[in-house]
Image 1: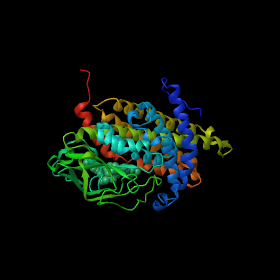
Image 2: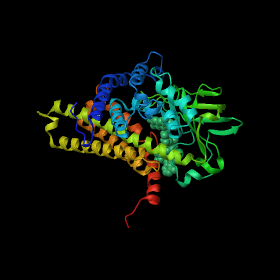
Image 3: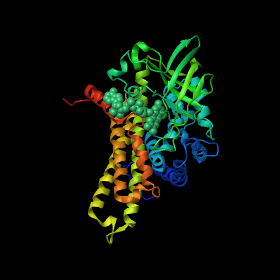
Image 4: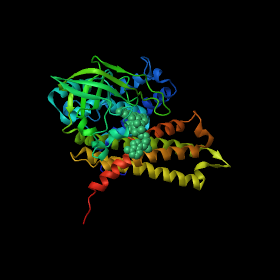
Length: 414
Ligand SMILES: Cc1cc2nc3c(=O)[nH]c(=O)nc-3n(C[C@H](O)[C@H](O)[C@H](O)COP(=O)(O)OP(=O)(O)OC[C@H]3O[C@@H](n4cnc5c(N)ncnc54)[C@H](O)[C@@H]3O)c2cc1C
């Protein structure tokens, strides 16, 4: 791989990690993602599906523990290395990269508080798992609550009139959880564990939430059907229902007293991560387009020789590079602080995913009619990137959240 990275401080280890992950993305993820894209949601998760081949190989290589600190069995990566690896995985397939990312979510959430019992019951078994038999998910959105679950410190978040559909209440040494999470929970129908975000103190509105890192084999948990959608078809999604589920206190990560602060820290990482995924998929589209334009002859010339094609490619390249710069910077900054600047993560996600979608759209234009066919990867990248404008927070509302924070916290020199 001959790939320029503007970061002059990349170490030999960083570059080796990038090359190794790129090989995995190219040789394992790309062909499997293509197969899965053409299957029904039920076939994607069937026992003999290539989805499991991917997951098992990824777990064997430790890619499920990218976000987990080394003392608990994680990969021992710097935030920059995490960003580098996730970009490559998203280059392979953004849907599969998301599946791997959310698989670690209960453990990632638990690592933020690092209680002994959570380390022992949740994090260590997950890190030690090599066969993808432990899969996590992130259940935050609900049928009636999408965007409003992702706006910590916005006035809407403290409105006591807004009642969540999934709630927990204390009963002795256990919490009783009832309600449901949306059909959008990634890995929702195949997960064994959930980082569950639910409401505990209704008088505080959404801010009165709690986060559990809990197993899903408890009585009263059930799952919906896998969701059928236009993009990221290799990513399983579906509802989770909780019918008076009794969860031991040990699985609580945080209650209403610090929910908003921990959510802010969590979102500052996951939102920036979406920007990193955007850099990966946008680069994939640029790579495909460069290759195509160098070979396609039209009007007696190669497409690459037309100035308007060169110009379009330049703008696509600009979007890939600027997305990586802001997303990597926001991710690294926010991984290194307990007072995150979430607005930068929102820029990374909103700017990055819009750029990725624009790059995929421009790519189709350069491919001409061929870009619309199933013969070329570009139509899949277009569909996958479209989903990213909504995934992990609609860009419209993330801009509202980011704008609100900007108005109230942006530092001024004078
Ligand atoms: C591929 C994918 C993966 C996902 N993975 C997960 C997951 O793992 N776990 C999980 O819990 N969820 C997941 N989601 C759900 C995702 O977070 C939500 O879809 C997203 O937050 C938007 O919520 P919604 O779909 O309910 O849209 P809504 O909240 O209904 O918003 C729809 C539109 O209404 C407008 N709008 C909404 N609220 C406001 C407001 N306050 N002010 C102004 N305009 C507003 C905006 O234009 C917005 O785009 C995923 C979604 C996708 C597409």
